[in-house]
Length: 162
Image (cartoon, rainbow, N blue to C red; front, side, top):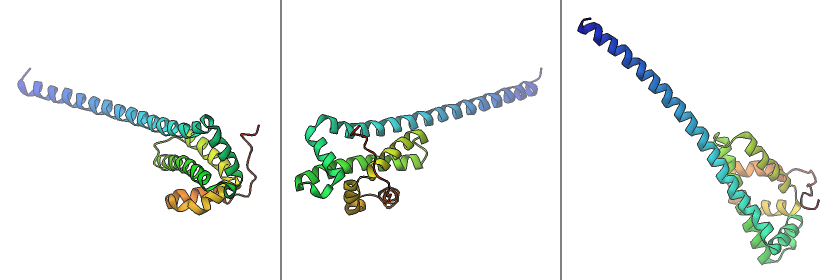
């Protein structure tokens, strides 16, 4: 075998190895993307669960929440601040999830569950009252999404009364 044939064989083997490396790299990047999506969804869901958990750990906040979602204006000034903080935390996380879903970083199943819960919450008169005076706290795009739910004439469910 001469040196030219040996060099050509080495070039073919090297090209084959490069192709295999590129395919392997593509698979690894795809797997990392999937893992990053899962991690993002889990992190935001955990944050939201933390906000929800504050209701179960505080009888006072639970009472304020129940009264406020039905009639926000009936709350005292201090209670309005507490409930506004709660709603703001909840919707700020939902806003993050809204944009992460739009960018394909949160899957449809995770987003749809949150979106349906948000729809239920937005049907309550107290939430509607709160939102109409504070929607400017959120981005225009997310605000338009929530405002569609706020405008709904459907009666709210009673998920905490059952």
